[in-house]
Image (tube, rainbow, N blue to C red; front, top):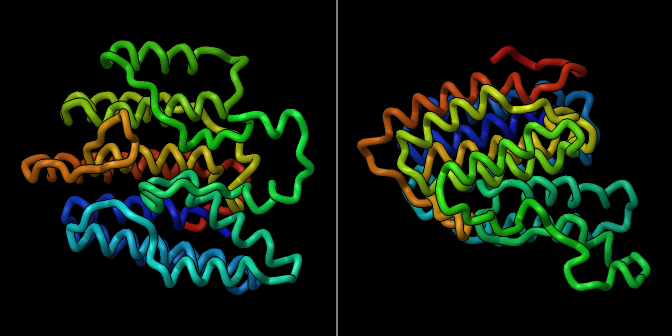
Length: 280
């Protein structure tokens, strides 16, 4: 199952936030089509995951189209479907909620304010030890507060230190990139656009181990999520949650930035192995 569909839906949300109806609808259709292309060979569990996530993204996109605040939990009916499935006693059904919750955990488009812990159902069965019971031992790194750099130069220097260290694990680099992009949400759009353009050109390839499903890794999806948020909205880096609608005078340039970012990020996130379901 290709997670490229979720990349399409992230960008569809971005265009919806900026009132760009035609690209929004096109990306929704492409995302759904991408899912349908592999449905014949998919197992029931994969279909359940895909259907739930498409519905969740569709809800956020509908919020954006209706100019509603990007905040709050997903609707009760989606939560009820998830809770009902997770109560199944069949072993093969247990990973369904985990796969869904991983994407909810890393994506602030899907979950702007809720703290999702995909590991909680598994942790409750683990035997407590001195290490696991220490306060802060289990940290949700993609939901941790973003460093409040005093200025852009400081944020850029911090990121450079992470990107130039070849010994640093990719997860550390990915978190530094995500934090930098979130920080950019509070600086003026013209400066932010230039920084994002430069950053996309130097993004390191993340290994596709620990993939969310089969293609884009969770690091790829999290970074794309933050970049779409930084283009389609303005935020306060102190909270990393509230996304404000930008001034209408900036919509045109931000729409162009979304188109350019998607063209480059789809190829960046797509692994060397595995089929490309369509060209970007």
